[in-house]
Image (cartoon, rainbow, N blue to C red; front, side):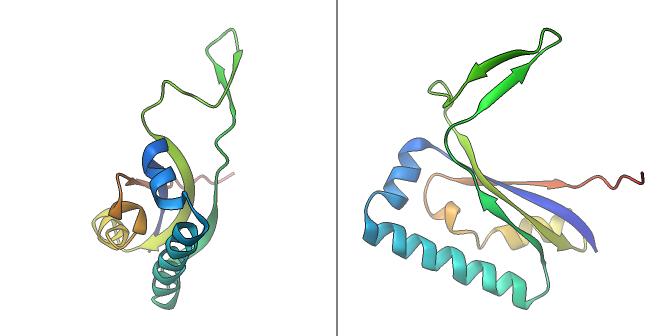
Length: 118
């Protein structure tokens, strides 16, 4: 088994559509918890990760310029992350198909976690 990170990408509009009222937020949270429990039951969750706030900063380039977020020019944003264990990237991508973010305009970016031995 190898580790893969899921980066949950969405648009500001899709996020508002999924979480725009207490009822929608509750329904969305129930779908996320059901998917998470299913992955945990099958032994694929290594780290539940966390949702991310919309605000942030970017440090860029050799001059180390810091700019503020949020990032209104961005069409999609990383809303959170999670680390799963899977046989290979094909299985990790298949497991991601159950993610509730896909019911809207979202995406799950699946990336292998590089193993570093320090």
